[in-house]
Length: 402
Figure (cartoon, rainbow, N blue to C red):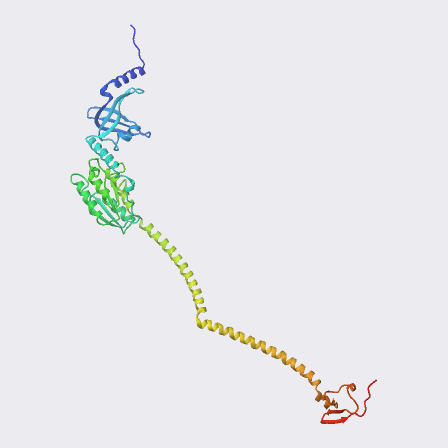
């Protein structure tokens, strides 16, 4: 008897075709509890979906996660998986290939979330141009959260650690359940009227139902209309709400929101001290420069005063007078010396002195000095002046020297 013998690959390929040809297995949704959930370094997620009687292996590839998974899936979650059943031929094991994973019972909430997110984004409410900058040195901070939750204690602790002098104003809001939406909106409007530096809107983590108040459109519009910068700190780092997109800043946790809102006072004080030293140094230099300039102006002003000008001119006049006297005295002394010398020479030429020595002064008939016989004739009268009188004589004879 002949037998048909097939390889393992042939059988697995045959079964794979059966799965792919089955309409029901090609697109189905199934619910169950997550177990053995593993996030692979490649981005794929491997997990088991089980109920009280059975289990099935599942995988979501990395390429499907961006649109197909909107929460941080973990063991114990009740979920709805939409995808198809196929065979992993290499191991001969069938499994569910997930295209979309939702928390059981909240699929409609995710649809509402995405619809509102798209609507508000298209209207421009998420645009960066509307984001108000956070103040660098906030001193009055508003807080909207439950008064007894861990979030408010984290915000207060971090705020006071960074800046012991910050003023915190708490609006005790209902952040979950019926009545949470109007409570949050009232808190935003109330604190916005107090002219605070910044407002922190937050709460701790929870399920999508717990955080849903922060996904409501009226809350989003209240945040958008507020004049005070608002930091949204709702849930954990992986949680995103509509409030996060509308707010001026999103914080992963309430503690991080407090860090964003508060400056470190010690760093600020050190900066102020450095600026103060620089300012004092600059002022000292400036004052010294102005003082020197003022002293120069004072000296110049003193030199321009009338009495100082007169005194300066008087001093100059006195100096010139002294110089003139000195020059005159020197010139007089020179002339006196010359006069004495001339007087000595003149004295030596004096006729009186010569007469005293026995000489006489002879004048002719015309009264002129006689110094030659050529102009005289016998019979001319002569006058002779001697030391003690005059002699009158007449020429009786003339003889010339040979």
